[in-house]
Figure (cartoon, rainbow, N blue to C red):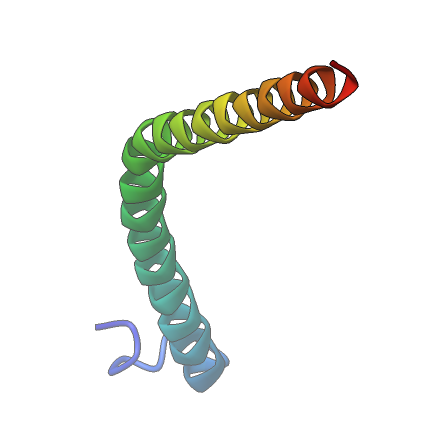
Length: 76
């Protein structure tokens, strides 16, 4: 309405800035959704990584125990 009445000195600049702000708000909304999805998946990912780390630690300990047992047998 103000544009049609030529109420603004730089109507084209104002329209461009409004377009830029609209794009920015849409980008923020999209990012918010992405962050929400990421935040909800992080605990699951963390649990999986901890399980993998625990499995690798258990495997390394078993290997170390097996090597220590092998050394004791060769001395006898």
